[in-house]
Amino acid sequence: MTATLLAFTIDCSEPSKLADFYAKVLGWEVTYAEEEYAAIGDGTTSIYFGRVADRKPVEWPSPDKQFHIDLRVPDVERAVQEFIDLGATRPDFQPGEGKWVVMQDPQGHLFCVCPERSA
Image (tube, rainbow, N blue to C red; front, side):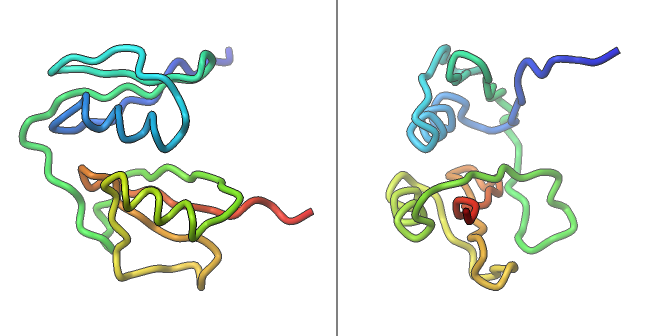
């Protein structure tokens, strides 16, 4: 049996705000938003955001990291600055020797900004 991925759910303290952040980052639409739950999607894939009031951001670097999202962009430094302008942060510790940039969204979840593949 194979499964079809419906969505990925991210626990956070403010679902609507985090949905708005990722909708802007990905160019997706906010499809649902309330205090306890929010969702974004592109018509095929969705990311859900569920309220966990006492959730604490993970320290970085740390073995406590449970997941991160990788995003591919045409211009890494430009994207990093745009994401910072939207409320993300760029931690001091950066593995990968400049091949990608680790960032934290406004609620402390990790994501990587990766360059387009070489031809």
